[in-house]
Image (tube, rainbow, N blue to C red; front, side):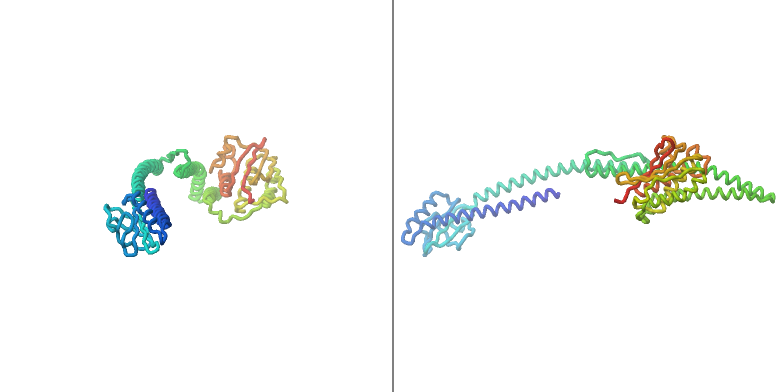
Length: 434
């Protein structure tokens, strides 16, 4: 409708301009002829004027051009019509007003030549014919445009509707539990394809989150089953001892320790969820990784020495590596990585902390020469509550690296584990403030 209305308005304006231009040309024509005939008049030679007017009148039909010379008394002395005296200048008149046959309309020019009035006129027949041709052509063009607009609109609307139906079908399927449903893409890069791609990305993210939630629920049930059973046994032991009148303080202390461990697990899970929700971004400030890592290494130097390990650093203290982040969370991330290396490596392990620049990112590495992690396990250790079989003999809840990954994601970075040959190297890659 907008297209058709715009076309009609444009056509109407064009038609009006054309009509005005034809009228200007008609005025110019009769003005030119009036001037040409007037040039033949001389006060003492009226014959040339009369001869010229009669010649023009004989050469033109009255329905095309009209000429008339009227003397001071109002009598016609030359020409092909004898009408009333017309007003001075250019005006419109009809054949009836001029006493002519037919129903033609005229554009006339009336002006004085000495004491005589010369009237020159031209009918609107030719301009009307051009206007009619233009008007009819415009009507046919409008009909054609309306037809094309309707057909094109139907085709376009049906095509868009099919694609919108595809989006609706996918969303309906997802709402009914088919989380793997996706919106079909055409690959032409138009707006609907772009929106469909964004919807699919959101659905992919939702699918990953749901799978993660399912996995976390399963892991929580699996990981807490053992400590809850131990807690139950210790409580039962304490109850039995109490019934005998022999309170068992060891069982109660063990129960308390199990409760603390369970609370620590849930607190870590809650902390990871809060970080993934981005709640801590309001605390982001400019952080110098050189200062942060140096302070962390100083704190854990004695811890590594007590574990019969060596903690070294190759960080240039004079060079700044500025990132936008939360000082506390970034400290927690590097603490977890260093603690993991100390906890899971044997005595005599050498742990090195380094910091370098790679393009627009800072790369902080914690490397060791311990046993390392098998390549097929490196991606799994970032899952919540996931622990390697060989790590189940050590303390921990399997959430340390999950927390590290969540903190890195919050800061727009990532953490990767690579082979150190021998040992393992954990690299935290964070965007720098440029």
